[in-house]
Amino acid sequence: MRRFLLHFFFPHESNNQRAKLLHPSGLILIIGLFVFFQVTINQLTINYPQVLGYAAQISPEEIVRLTNDQRQANGLAVVRLDPELSAAAAVKAADMFARDYWAHVSPVGTQPWNFITQSGYSYRYAGENLARDFSDAKSVVDAWVASPSHRENLLNSRYQDIGIAVIDGQLEGRETTLVVQFFGTKLSAAPSLGASTSIVKSVQAAESQPAPAKISPFDVTKAVSLTLLIIFVVVLVIDLVAVYQKKITRWTSKSFAHLIFMLALLIAAFIISKGQIL
Amino acid sequence: MTFERDFAHHPLHYFVLLCVLLVGLWGIFWFDYHRSLQLGILVSMAASYVVWGVVHHAHHRDLHIKIVFEYLLVAIFAVLIFASLILRA
Image (tube, rainbow over all chains, first blue to last red; front, top):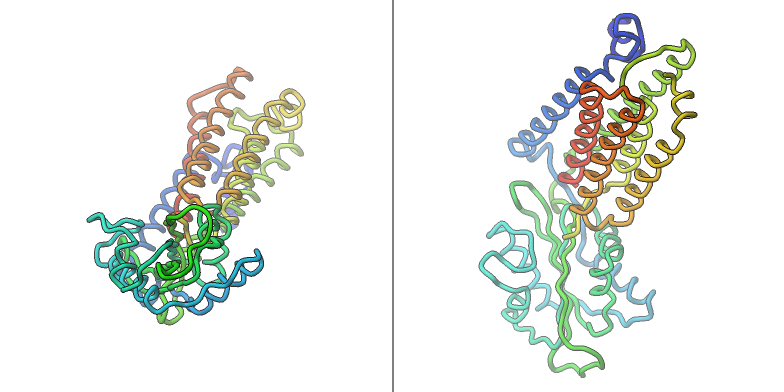
């Protein structure tokens, strides 16, 4: 065992004074194992969704509250939860699952506004935000606020009403929770100054709603990725120290460059969080 | 050549590498709401890294296909890790 560890992680005579992990064969092995790991995760997610899947705790009321917090913080009036807009949002989410698309406009060309009109809400202004794969309401709203275009929708002074739907289902081959947020102002409402029409935006958010706690494939992937990167960083530091102390001369790629690159990747991997914006 | 001698001979090379990676990291952080753009930035960082390796070793006159392969594998590993996270996020 000790010999194996020495061979794989430390510069040694057996590995030509360079940890085997840093040899092309070692790198190919790690890449192969990581690909295998990802394929396994995929299979487990499909075959055992009750164990490995997405689970979210997103409350529509919480999204409305956080949205209004943002609006008030920016000196805007709060939006009221409108049952017709919420119904429209639910139909939109159901349509996305049924037709398996992640977009503002459905594959058959249905615009978001069609859902709003069909629900009985005659709008003067309307807007849409979408979200998927987030784990909580705050992450969803934070993601919208971070995106300039979604933020513009969220903090639009022309909107008076809001409708929210948080629906679980299978989208593009994986379990997810869709959050559909509609904004609107009724046609009967007094028009405000400024330009008229609407903006449609979508954000990906939370995981499945009523589902019990599950192991998130993202969390597993992130944990494994960070562990692998940390191992690489440690092995590279050991390599640099050993080469420096023993004055080893080698004809290989530069460990220091690898170290800088791996550290950058480690930071990048650390930054990535659940949920996406379209 | 040991690291300290290499660094002393080519400080500009490492400075350029550091700048490229820092700019890339800033982009990944800044465009947190745009997954495909983040992936594009990481792929660009990885490609730049391979190019950096080739230029650096060509300058050293010790460029060999095995060395290029090593940089390429590290870059592939980076893209694989990052793409997995992006796709599962």
